[in-house]
Image (tube, rainbow, N blue to C red; front, side, top):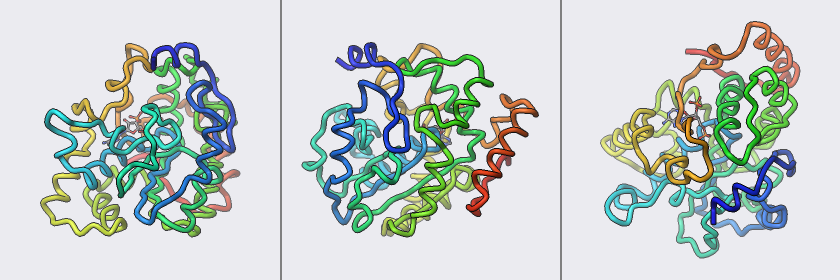
Length: 291
Ligand code: A3P
């Protein structure tokens, strides 16, 4: 069934600030999500694509669902435990999900459930956009439903115009930061999570009101390390859904800060910096471009 949907679905369509995949995302369904009823203890991890979504899904699944759900014969993938809010591939009725519900979403803040402004919590993760562009370039060439683009220069222009999966990185991040105080929110960067994963786990668990002992924090930080996630089939969407992806590639790919340097030319980087300075001039947000 999944194979059929994805083979016939091709290309992107714009939806309220982001681009989504035709045939996978339905406008009617997306519109209904804006009024989705939020509970006090709902948690949404919100990201622009390729900014650490799988990573935060894994951390949330460890924080909320522990090992009993992740191991043994009834084990569930992190995509089942922390589902993609707007994709809902398994057609689960989220209204019947037990609390606390944990979701991941790429939706622009104008189209996530507006009830989140009153109730629930949001963890927003942003990543430096040069690494995002390279990572998204690989995703565009790895997902069957997206048109592949072998030339990075062409892809980069489309990324800067917002004509890629997820739409404009600039709009997603700047709109979020402009309005984040209207939500109960924790904002993190991918780079901070890389620099000190344990500290990020502590910040996330404190924000979510969890009082965890040092040993549990250590275990969660260790199980969400890049190396361990790369080896964990439950963490890998491409392993869970082989029909969606091509043979070569991986969603959990390199996990580095500054990998853009292997792909950007000096000229591309300079052009990017110029556009970045212009678009981000009102937002005092600092990224680590390399470590
Ligand atoms: P790269 O392609 O640069 O390696 P998302 O899950 O939002 O699509 O983000 C994917 C990016 O996060 C990929 O970046 C992937 O390798 C990286 N990633 C996934 N798990 C990670 C982890 N545990 N630690 C660091 N990076 C991780």
